[in-house]
Image (cartoon, rainbow, N blue to C red; front, side, top):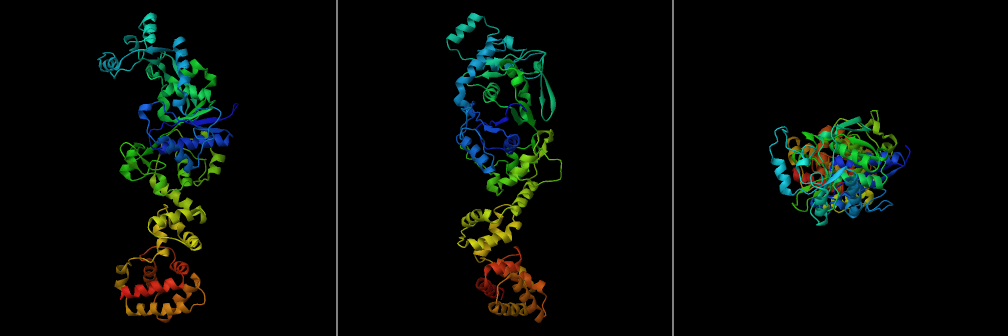
Length: 507
């Protein structure tokens, strides 16, 4: 590929990290790691009006949880800093001035009132709301309509102004997208975007081009919503650095929700997360639940997102991060939108829980149980419990329901499920079972099951009719793993105690 692969993710610190953003990070990360390149995170905070306190730290926390940490960033440092655009402010104006000097941009002194008037003027040959473009600019107050002397005077006086790109008329701007092939634009249809704002801060358009050049970015990957900005960026590359210096581009497809592009509102409406981690807006205090807090493993989220727009050409669905790095290619990223399916997301999580080691859950399950006022002091027992129940868990909070009864006797029993078929014969059976279990030389699930069935046969009872009462005695309800495996872990004393208690309740 010639020069070293360097890719970047450039978020604005304005709120929660949406699934689309995490997938953009993932595809950048996979591409860089496969090519032996660098993955950079650059904070694009030039729009200070949209800056949200805590959002930058949140973004890095999300990347850390996902296991997608950058090689260079505000936190890691690197040779191409600063990695926060607001700290690079002085870099941009010389490039904007160069564009003005060479005739590719101009100073615009229009007041907010001038712009408002322009937007609301009725223009017969322009049916849509007017843009500040080649049809408008010569009617506005800028260095194209003012004399050189007037322009110099205004600049010397420190008059508020912006610098706008002068989009050419009737030209074609094109590039080769790694996913979509050749993409072409008519420059006459694009407005004269602001490049440098009145406060001296660059807009995204100027900053992204200058920063990608100075940071030696080789490939720029972003969502397809940025395609309309491409002609402006192509021209800036052409005017400032030459098109041969421009990174290779790829525009990822949208992630779709139930009604078009997946949005935060979809999550609130349909009850599924759309952010990697929970985000609380510091202004409104509105909390949006994330995948982490919902009980997803980061491996499952990464696996899910990788397949929302890409596949390796096989039927394989479960991928480790190493496998994704080995198999990922931009050629197999789809151009069409990918629909997010929450049930499929839960399936991925269930599969990853099943594949994960018992020990990896120990701390998490302890914490979850502690939050439900259940203290675990026996780690050996905890590991046995996790091993027994983890295949039954879809989300991490499921461990509470599936394992809490091992450490705390059920507070209530589902008596209604037992009483319709409860009789004296069954009561006598369990009384005999207790005595037999107390004398049992070992306490293994297989022996417990054998004794259970032998006593049932002697008393002419069907084991199947006795299993439900036994489960409810131990668990409290009609769920859980094999009942004899439960009894083995509970131990002889606790099992006997629970049977005794239940017999009194059943009557």
